[in-house]
Image 1: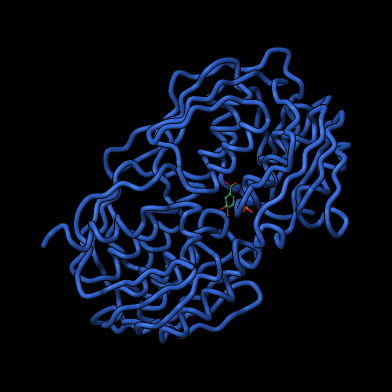
Image 2: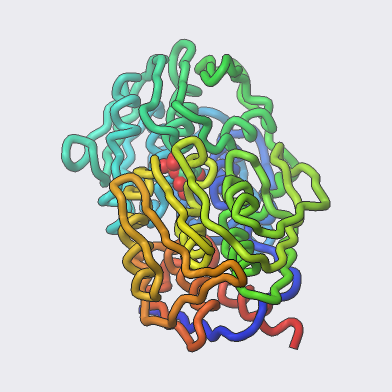
Length: 440
Ligand code: S3P
């Protein structure tokens, strides 16, 4: 089992880039596979999650040529997928398995979708229930609550559905199913979750409209959509987040992260950190694949605690592990509530982050829907955590958050079970070493 040793004592300085956005890469593979013709997906995320989605489409009869720089996807049109000859393994990816289930529910063949131990624990009922309302035939453990899922493709009909949770995975699974359904599907959610599917639909000119918070989409379009010569995936904000917090809390740091996606449905961390006192500037703003992109420069700054309620959760959802590291060294209390979704991520992030950071001296009280973090900082400077021997609990974002936490300690921190980092950011250690050594 891989482990990572973090040796603190230096500021983070220099310029780096991060892998392509994981959420957008999944969707780019899906929509280019369903397009007519050959598309190139550049700067895609080469993490295991997205590679599993790529392999899934290869198993579904799509030719995808892969190099380090780009994927060349030979799309076969809306109805071009064919039955795989074995189960599809989505690995650790909730996005992969949920979006594929929606897409495959309306095909005319049978598929089994499964994943690793963590995926087989995560809730699937949230997509299976509305998909069954559309007429999908899905079997699974515990009545379809848990993977593996067996999807017998069937003729779907449109529904009107209000999701009880703000989840881009639910919304996107239903949008993909709706493409194959008869009639007009309407999908609403309590608060806007990340809208990458909607933005890519626009990028490919796939018809849908929005009325207030409801998405409306007509199924079975007469003509599909065309391939694009090149789709450049923006850098992953959720990967940049580790360096944004790292540069903020390690004094003397000054880091620029190039070409990062700054979709407002993802960048709640910037709003929260700015309220906490962080020094963050965005420049070189432009657009890629219908998404706003910028370079992000972060200098170290003294932080104070804040209150984060339900209205900020969807746009910050993947950043809570690293946000807790910032809160742990800030001055004063940070209160996070309305974040119960954190309990059903790659790990129960309220429990795993609290346990691991408390072992490093943080003061965190778990709540059913969040946590209270009493920061170790003072009015003069941010506090410091203590080195510890931690573990990731199989969760890539917990592993990388502990690595950044370790930079504030005075002796090396060891983190076990770090193979999971491969799911999103295989080269994170390399990037960190680069920033720690660039100025020597
Ligand atoms: C994702 C949506 C979010 C996020 C996950 C990626 C996506 O999950 O936490 O990492 O790509 O759609 P939920 O839809 O469960 O909120």
